[in-house]
Amino acid sequence: MRLPCVLRPLIPAGYAFYARDMARKDPSKEALDRVRALEKAAPSDSGVAALRGLLAHQNNHIAGRAAALAKEWKAEALIPELRAAFDRFLESPVTSDPGCAAKQPIMDALSVLGCADAEFFLAGTRYVQREPVYGGGTRYMGPRASDWRDPEPRGSQDTAAGVRGAAAQGLLNMGYPDAYLELANLLRDPDARTRRMAVECLGDSGAYQAELLLRVSALAGDEEPDVVALALQALMRLAPERSLPFVAQFLRTFNLVIAEGAALAIGEARLPESFAILRRALESPGRRSAPVNFLLPIALTRSDDAFDYLLGIVREDREREAMLAIKALAIYAGQELRVAAVRAAVDARASRDLAQFFNRAFEPQEADD
Image 1 (tube, helix red, strand yellow):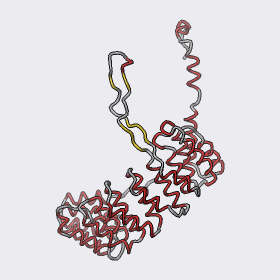
Image 2 (image 1 turned 30 degrees about the vertical axis):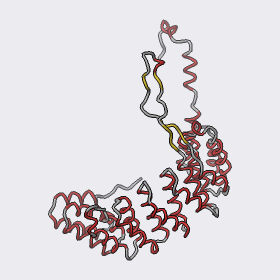
Image 3 (image 1 turned 180 degrees about the horizontal axis):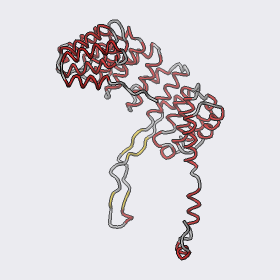
Image 4 (image 1 turned 90 degrees about the vertical axis):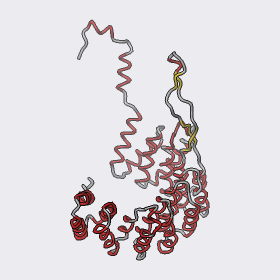
């Protein structure tokens, strides 16, 4: 719509320049659009060429997403560009890459793409990036606008936990002879995120040295109990038969996170002894003061004895326990005969609450597109 001639002189003289600036394309937005398009596309030579340019972008989030895609595409040809990008974000890292949004996915990509630079990964396992922590919003210091002050840092936090964990994975993947010595250090890292990643690395390694480290880690404990639970689950993946008696000890602990983690590890292993061990733990007198939901781990054993045991709880126990058993039995939702058996046990109780709970637990799940 054209403005009346009488109003045109009122338009600021700089408006035309402002309008032209607004019409210019934002380079970062264009790069982000390219990344999004590549994330939806199949791997290709042209796509790898595009990633090469995106890894050189100064925006850490764009470079990080490009690195994640290079890992997904297994684009080993991009190892030099990934290394160059990592080194670039080491310059003024707090301002160029806050939160390690680029360095972590870059290190993660290099760890799986075949980079064999031990010194690089060793430096990564020791990398710390401390960033200021703010809080409280702006502070009013006086009546003038200039008297508003940004908040001062309340301290600092390390944002490189994921970088250290990914670097350790890189040492393992390249077969570095002292990789387990480095992982031993990371199991006592100050940041729980690094400790979790170290446990996951060991669990995926398949090595006897990893089994020893995981046992020591579980026995030493951790201020974050889920780290111990992860170690127990990793042990059951590494050496299920040998680890079963060791992990079963943790069923007696009164830390519910650790006890449930041990139970899940035993249930998922589906060993012949799994159900009997979990049943004894569930029925032990000590569990009355610290009840742990062992019913899902029992269901995960997938044994006939376990199914019959849970069905008995649905038929005979109090409604609360019956509901927990129904929830556990929902893993059989795709098996018509077993679903019918659970429905019959619920119907025999003539409880509207149980019937409604059964319907919610076993309702058909919509398939993902």
